[in-house]
Image 1: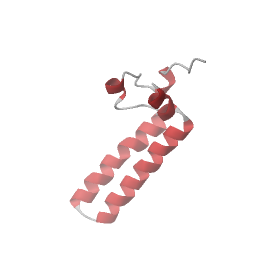
Image 2: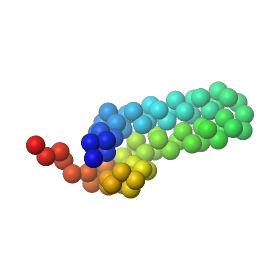
Image 3: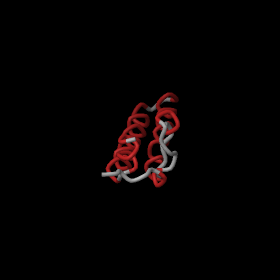
Image 4: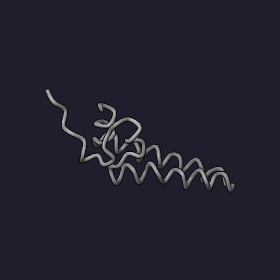
Length: 74
């Protein structure tokens, strides 16, 4: 659950956006059909960061939406 908490934090969301933008940039630099496909795939982490959702949440037993993650108990 700590991973899910990190990904729902500002830092985790910013990381997903930055990685997504990097993937888009990399794909566009390729200048081919495969590069375009890679760039389109790069949109997914950007959207996940902006919308605060996690596509692999069900695999790790966490809520899909970041705001549904319970706060860390002390």
